[in-house]
Length: 257
Image 1 (cartoon, rainbow, N blue to C red):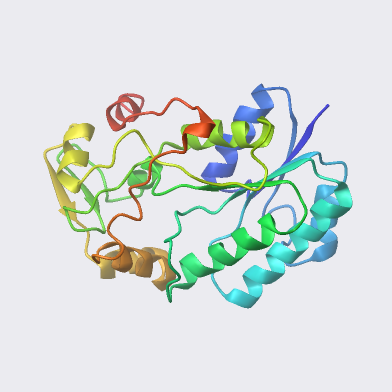
Image 2: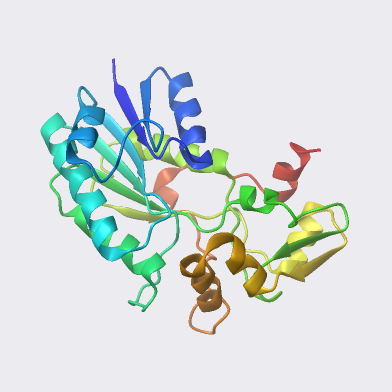
């Protein structure tokens, strides 16, 4: 039986992947804060013992030295286990050109480390998740708020579609060594998002309010997305090689009524 390690299982994305692959017959185990320390090489090696496939999401940490240590531990453990396929979810799309932002650049460095590791790897790069809108204060019956100007397009992705993409990336032949962008079926401006959700209006969330909830590294992503250079970074098209059906915003909203 194929054994899947979901590293980052404490997060909603990891949970969606774990549920989908369990239903597909994988023997799934999780690794997160409750089960081990990603900074401990011995903890990570134990987690990979007997594992054939791995889905990896790094914690929301953006200090270069710490992230490098995490990635090195995962690569070492995956090599020792003889992992057949590793899928790294960068948890963000990545600008084509380098930036000064740790939230992008630590993930760019992790992507390159995994792809050059010798472990058969596929990288997935999703933009914003629709489930982000479930944070308190962002969505109600009258309006949706998000920390972007109303004219910036976002290709909102449902976490169920991330799980479907992860399944393909773990199993389809010939994908090793690829970094694949994800995105919902359409890139929507703020007013278009509000209309798709069936609420009255879009209200840009002040960045200082957002920053107090998520920290500076994540808030800096949204500062960048609001610039001319960054405004298309969260509007990717899902790579056709994945061949998955995508959930539109209205469909996603219907499941929450």
